[in-house]
Picture 1: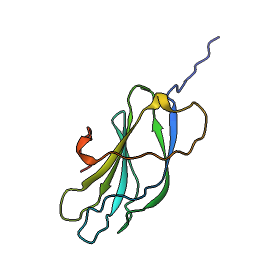
Picture 2: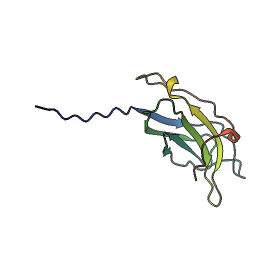
Picture 3: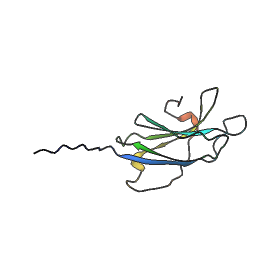
Picture 4: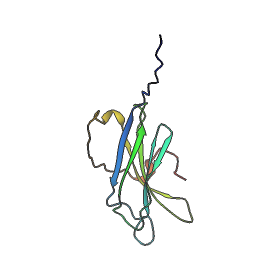
Length: 123
């Protein structure tokens, strides 16, 4: 006799974008309309846009496919613009090997200024 098995050996990481603070003001009103964009292994995830704030709260959770543990998770913060391309406010490169296995952690990350981002724009 035989057994047929399907094994899904693609680990996923549960990532919750909680909030941002003291973001750059990208609009003329001294505020931004920020959203967070997450890229890993050519998959993209995006939070909702928060209007006119430099301290947005999201509390949005994404299950991210991390089968290639050498590929970092790019976390980018954009200012939503209605009539032009969205502006990159900052980014952070989260390295998967730095994340402890099966441990729930809350951590604050300092974002880098926009000019160094390596990923394509969110469009």
